[in-house]
Amino acid sequence: MQKKLTITVDEQVYAGLHQVIGRHKISRFIESLVRPHVVSRDLLAAYREMAADESREAEAHEWAEATVVDVEHETR
Image 1 (cartoon, rainbow, N blue to C red):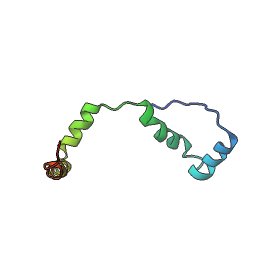
Image 2: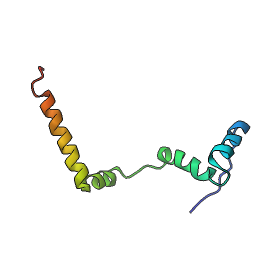
Image 3: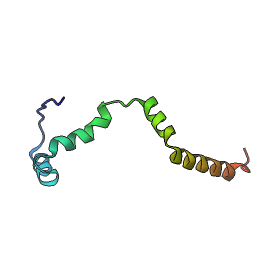
Image 4: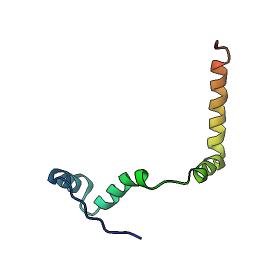
């Protein structure tokens, strides 16, 4: 469900939004910028989703193993 919001911006910002983003795309643009800051994601679900990606997990494992080899002879 969408809600209507009235905001106030400087006229240069307003003109720039119309010129760069386009008249009928401003709401979507602003929402995409604001959403990550105000809508929390379920991190557990996100981690499960990443773990289910077998090719990504294989790549991460390969990277981790290569990193361990890089530092195994380092002095502590």
